[in-house]
Length: 407
Image (tube, rainbow, N blue to C red; front, top):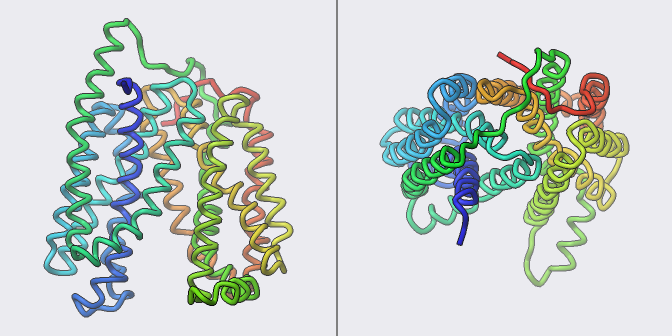
């Protein structure tokens, strides 16, 4: 029988999956359905999704503050219900403006998960490295499933169903979450236990500086590499893609499909790196783990300029292992260096900074690539893990289990 504790963690993971899944339905719907249904170009449709992504970033901090004051489990119930209802309303939209309003509220309620769900994960269990890694993989699955499942739904049930059905599923998770989370609190009260918290200490500004510097630079690299990788492959893997196309000529595989498959392979393989860094975090802590993942990125970015075909593919796998492997480190630092009472707002501030860095990555990459090509992009991105490596070794203590008050 599955323990109540395991059910609790599973529901939190499902929330992470749904958060990323529901946020990305629009991208596929706009590309595959609405351009025909509403007679608008893809470029004309994209601005209607901007408010949702802005709300997803800007509401993270206030949602964290609200969770610290009102209660995290209550906020998670609001998340499952609110984002589900918003998705259903979006699916019923009759005009682009109504669609934009629905997407805005998907972003508002979607902003709840990261500051609240991750605060619960890092507060409930003492060994959080591996749990953060597993939770992160669920989020990655949500990103990957959004395009695939939405495309299937559009073909078989229409674009409205692509919003409405996942919205109903999200709402259905609210009731079991209420039941399981109340049971968890009741079990803790019966045993006289309290939720694990970090030890109390005076503010540690050096640690706090490293935490948010790591989150900002790490998010910049993550967004830049994940967005640009398909285009990098399109430019640098021409020979390899052609060889694969010829080798599988009987299957009529085109070069675009080959590029997509290789990019998917790289992302899937890199996601597994989070399990390795999760185990390292629990055993060794953040300082040596950050040293490893940033050193991997630095080495890969150093050799990537000029590479093509198989050499570029191998280098891309290596750099993405470091990029994806760093993701749980940022959340581990927040979870182990912030006090229990302010942890949600600390996560909120971390994700506010991260999502703003995401938006800055796109114009930065466009500027660098147009002026110096992707070799210039690689050399510029090299600076980010280098700064993280230096700052983490200078600012982080050997143990990051002390508590700080970030807000």
